[in-house]
Length: 271
Picture 1 (spheres, rainbow, N blue to C red):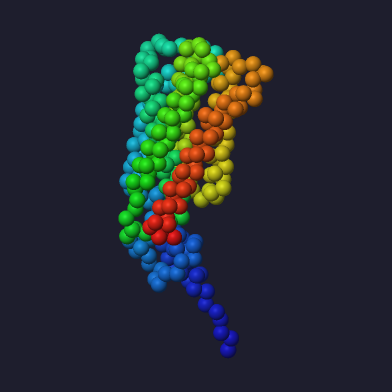
Picture 2: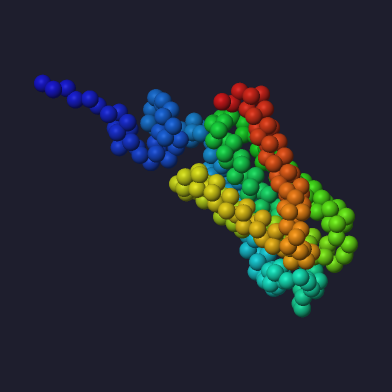
């Protein structure tokens, strides 16, 4: 009589596929004693964190509120972005609202990017529900990104003050840079949802972030040329200008995040 080999993986999957396939235990090949995995024993994911989901919902409400009540200034500023001049007042719109809306969107963009990095970090560390989740890392990342934005803004103001004598051009550049950075809140929010709640491969998500960065830098270079009326002969100087103010700070920030993450993992024996 022939003996057949029992495929226990198939049995477990058929027995309770909702429990097994919706966790990282089956995908990562982790050995479990029982197919009924308790919630307290499942690996932590940012997408299942109710606190973060509440904050993301609040961010969505803020973005919708800004685009509803400030759509006039947003559309008008986008039209003026491709021109040499900028009107500092729009009919029915207070200029102060422009800066308030931009800063709120910059904060939201910083939060979504920090949450995306924390999701990658939590998967690498494989937190369990019983482990104290280091939520302070998200706060530190948000603060680091906001400081990074302000440092870049100060660097731009300093370099522009040295090389470009006209105050109108410098003011126009500062407002354009802040506006363009604030617009990244919406695509970053969408990419975060794509990362947390879809089966999209990680490399595609990274590719989307890369495309978004390329579009951002291209729009920034375009504005730099038309705002300061740069001649063709100064193309090399402009690229050096962008590398010193854009590329170098970004690389330093990324290396600092990588170093801090490695130090945290080694110090807490999380791998």
